[in-house]
Length: 174
Image 1 (cartoon, rainbow, N blue to C red):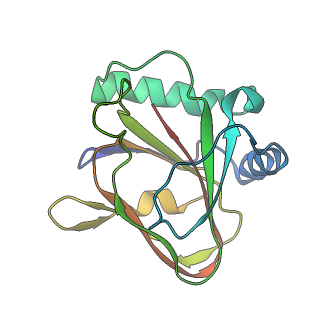
Image 2: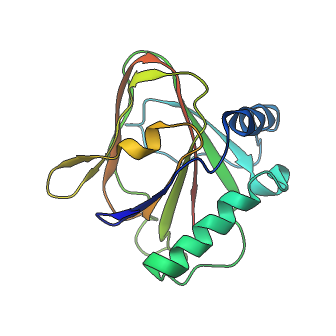
């Protein structure tokens, strides 16, 4: 379904597959890659190299490229990104204020698409994903484990404070 410049896919991974991906990522945190997020991000993050993930995310990346070809039309590198971020919002008021997922001006590469996979294994309250499209626009479809959200990286987006439970997502950029 394509809404307001984003696309979501329902039940891409089962809860068991989400647990397997999360367990594997937790055991294979990268010491090479570093998450370059800003100081305003109030969330635990670790990075996993995509080569380490082997075939676990092939379906995820294939859907990103297919969705791009069908709906966005960006000229993307055919190689997978170097890594993915695992974001864990688990203490009260963990949040990520409005931001864009773009490179600094003047850099050689340019980030076109952001893709998020919900890996949450338990329910949570708060932690709403919102985009700013003239007003706050809540994207509720990403709240279910196994769902994927893909959107242009230049769009401002945020995660509201988690007030209960644990919200876990995997993010990547192309």
